[in-house]
Image (cartoon, rainbow, N blue to C red; front, side, top):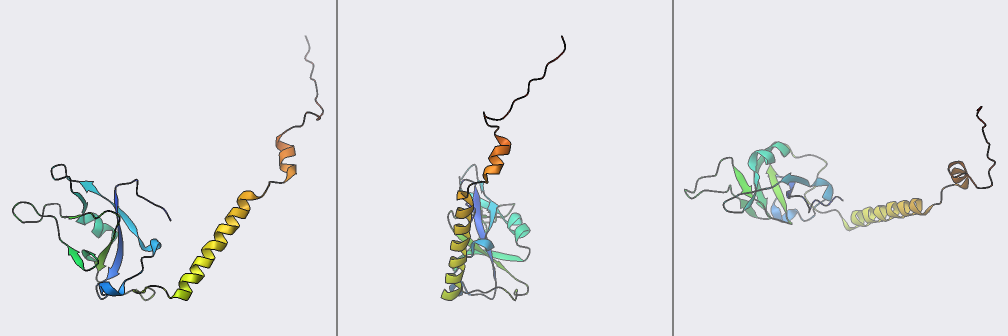
Length: 161
């Protein structure tokens, strides 16, 4: 998993409007999209532009944090600031609620314990294979070709004077 903490980004995932917040308990890291944050020079509030959210999530309706809908940031006249934006919440994966058809292969619930265990087992196997490859010594023939020995014959080439 890639960590983007050093970058100024907000994590988002897509959830369908028919899914209740209480049914979505598992966040798959592969479903997360990071969008750049900006900082308001006057208020110092971090925010994400609504147009960039819509660019990443075509059928975006609104953004929520668990059960709370995040409104557009407003000016002193209580009207949304243009361009529209929402406040960033660091270290949280925000839900972008989308309309349209529900994808048949997605599930709003967490994987079963058996699926989680199987996935964990696969990750351990992959890590073990990677470690094994990292600790393997290259064949000696490889080194013989690259590093001439001090015992190797040398040839002198005489040039005419």
